[in-house]
Length: 263
Image 1 (spheres, rainbow, N blue to C red):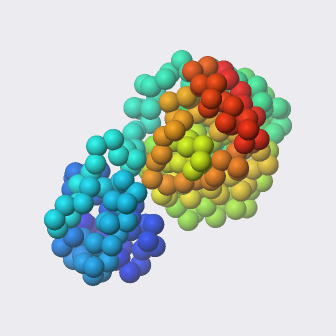
Image 2: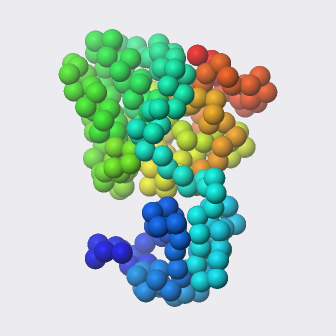
């Protein structure tokens, strides 16, 4: 587990669950006895945690531990893997999103492949302030005259994003015109979701910091649920998606009071 692992008593419940899911994703399984020893908390508590995660469909309980289920909601692909999927759709979404931005505005860019494509489109604008938690997006914009503000925080190497209390605290002090939020799942009843709990907390802080929230998501993200809810559907003002979004899905979004742009 490593000497830097927090004790279970120091962790928030959400952090403990994320820690368990990270271990399952890495090793394919976890044992109650090993977790209890490593975190310094009772086996009863560990079993309750695993029962809760199983109830959410995130693990498959076994005698003495848990396994990763097939098609799990905790699947967290790397940025490189994301960039290979729905490439043309994401490009069109990025162009449509860039058209919403005006000179001199302050915008927030979430980490992700679609927002990375958007960052490249925004280079056509002369003057802009961009707040982001994505190290790669800051790098994309390094050669511009933009004012680029990185949130700070702990680096998630999988997504090149910065997460944790430092990132959240920075965003609480910010006020932006538009947030462009990349999502891994958009369940119209549950809201927008992501596989990582720490990422969801930073995303939620972004939503609170922005006057307008624009979800940029290709049509494969609809009706998909990931581990952590960012915000309910009611917190989204605009959705930019591709032309494969079904009429039924589009109508449901419109009925919820959300502006829908098909790219």
